[in-house]
Structure formats: C-alpha cells, structure tokens
Image (tube, rainbow, N blue to C red; front, side):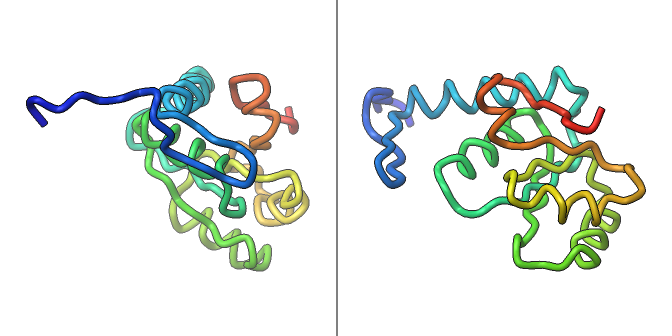
Length: 133
C-alpha cells in the first residue's frame, strides 16, 4: 500500500438515500465498537447479529470486528428454537438485533444467558442499550 493515498472523503457505502464516506463510516463504526467495549465485550467474545441487510448492518458488523469480537450472523427467518440453538452452540455473549425481532430474541433467549441490545437504540445513543435490565 506504499505510495497510495487513502481518500477519506470518497463515498464507500450507499444504501437507499444514505451515503457514507470512508471517514463517516469509520466514525459510526468507532462509536458503536467503543460502546460494545464499554459494555464488556472483549477480544474473542462472540456477538450474534440478527437484522436485515442495510447500511446499519455494515456499521454493526464492522463495529463487532473492531471491538475484537467474532460476529455470529443469525438469519432473521429462523424460528425461536433455531435461533436458541445458534445462540447456545456459538456461545454468543451478546446479541444485537433490530426491534422487529425483539420477541423472537426473547423466546430464543429464555434462559437470559445472552445479553440483548436493540440496534437502533445503540446507534442513537452511540452505545448499546440493554432494554431488559
């Protein structure tokens, strides 16, 4: 990469009517990754992610990686039993999810073993918000 200039003002991501430059995307990723770390996510922890493809998915995915954790994508079309199996089998410590999957996550995480955070609240406050405390 020697001799190459990284242009942070160039557009990297376009989703519907939203555009992100490299700098903006990195800022959003940093905010959430710092929030994850503040809430105890450590290097090597598994963080499940249940949401549809969007610009937010990109931010959350890279924030998990930047925090040093391992992303465990969970298909939003699965049943609560299937999601429960994935959460248990992957040994996920945290699950991040879109609001529309809150009841499915509640059913899948009946044991309360996995910390649950709603994505939108986490992004707005720049840190994960645990609605179940």
